[in-house]
Amino acid sequence: MPSPHTGRFAPSPTGPLHLGNAWAALLGWLWARSEGGQFALRIEDLDAARCRPEWVDLLRRDLDWLGLRFDGPVVFQSQRGEAYQRALEQLASPGRVYACFCTRAEVARAATAPHGAADDGPVYPRTCAGLDAADVRLRSRTRTPALRFAVAAGPVRFVDAAQGPVVQDVQATVGDFVVRRNDGVPSYQLAVVVDDAALGVTHVLRGDDLLGSTPRQIQLQRALGLPQPMYAHVPLLLGPDGKRLAKRGGPPTLSEMREARLLPERLVGLLAGWAGLSDGRPMPAAALVEQFSLAHLPRAPVQVDAAQVRATLQQLL
Ligand code: GLU
Image (cartoon, rainbow, N blue to C red; front, side, top):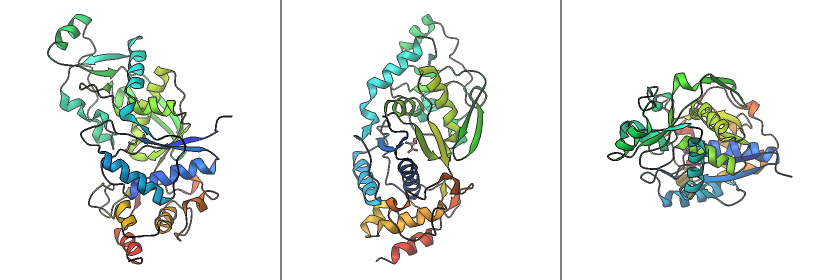
């Protein structure tokens, strides 16, 4: 019998893990374990310019320190090129992708998970949608095209386990989006969809900065004939300045806490307190499995008090 719930944590190894990553990892892990499910680790390392193997080693140690155990082998997106290529071919035969010669700057961000509507830029005006095969051949001589997915018209609706009903018209808000950059790298949207299906992921918990990507991913799932997981987009942790936590310059990173010999139970306690699962008392992740419920999550973003975090850290020094 397959597990009723397979979740995953999918960090991009572009820097040390911060509290926001720990928050998503812990909540995703608890959701899976509370339903007797599996939880996988996937390394989203397609953006070779920004990802480094050192960060992978570090994040694995940090997650282990936090008390999170993963099932199955760790999946690296950088090793899954063939699966993405097959998906692109599958989209090409019914004409759901087309070559796009628009500038690199416009498409460069496509391999990285976008964070907020502003990252998505303007709706793509379908400049290249009308090119015929001869145009494409001619232009390809001087410039390698990106590939864009021709999105379907009409609203995409789904019920998010944390946010409730969501509706987005992808054509009106994003337009045809990049599924392969012109340097050959598959986009975040394509890789996530292919990998979630290949891993048998049934439940996706992630920060609500990615809520706006989900309708695009659902459109890709439909076009590729893949199942749609259940989504839970959880509120973000914000820094004291009200901005989303960055990998640098915010409260201590997980490795800093680990190296300062903080008891991981203290960090888990803090996170659980913010998630409405406990009063913030130190406790191991495993002790929270039984009481976990998405219903306790706050509705609004959680503003992290860096002083509180540092004070928690200091107590142990
Ligand atoms: N790799 C993405 C990030 O670190 C997360 C992608 C996802 O959970 O779908 O923001």
